Length: 490
Image (tube, rainbow, N blue to C red):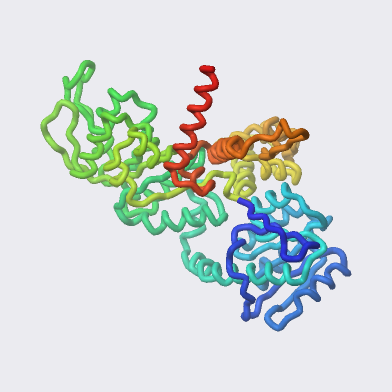
């Protein structure tokens, strides 16, 4: 989400991300800033703006040199001109974020561009300033960047001391260095060794099963089985038998005894995917099994104890399902002891390009041309696309692009047409005549519906973005439906 604010001075604008409401107090601790600009005169002006005792400023005219300096861990923040011709600014941001995700990059543009600002935050930029630069605005931005650096430094040291961190993030293709994914990794590491119930929530294609497998593989149950079932893929009349098992003759076609998945997973982990699709008639039986730590096979009078950790996942907002009577509240609280929210790909910044390069390396192994790479123009298209199908859609895109590539470089023409032609949606209300102006109520209706589209229909998330409670949003949506119904009847 972009927080755009006009700067204090009328001749300078700044697009601020993430920490727009953080403290703007000046840092008294020394900070190391790297200035990058091909124009020597511009470089001198920027340097002059930052001359104070609490800063150590280094300058560079080369982006490649700047990346080397960042790799050597001798900078706390980077200020770079977007007019650099040596390398695309977004590619530099991606590489800088990959080298040092804890170092803030402040971009300086020749003119304001909301699309460029949106692209900047996707690839990890901290701030976006527009020339002419006001010294006070630049100074405040640098102070905030240094404050962020001080906050992340202990986390970075902890991560470096965790020898399994790198292997953890890469082992199961759970790839990403964005802040949102680092939060996911942190929760997984903390919860893995317990037996607490974990609910994994995320849109379709975000990799919820990979997260569940990571929890299992980093737990004390890692040598036991990992048993997964998709609750939406099995008819309701067979699901109970799949989960709990059945006795011979319990129902038609039950020609032999069957051991259910709860018992098959003993000593390991049972993963119930799409738990939000669980039929309402099966929910009380699942709740009882989780409470009693035992199951009763269909057609049996005996309770059989099981020893399996139960993880669940859903792309639905279960709070909404409970509110609408489709999911039992007591079962929700039983499975929602620890919740892991897997972010959609569109909110993961530079992870898109990191994943794209990983998928290129994997899929290129099956093609005669061998090693391949993505062109800068193709990377730009991948970065700009919204990825409604998330990581799964990205992998399919790369698989097709590798197959279509004519050489060792994937170009824009090799990408799917929907990725090539994608343009970010804009919400706008334009009118050339008073008769075309809509009412405030209609404007609100359009905005609410647009927000719902952007968050994939997640009403809880939409209410959070809009600043409503969930009940208020429901009432407004019901009013819109009633209005449409009245109009259609008329």
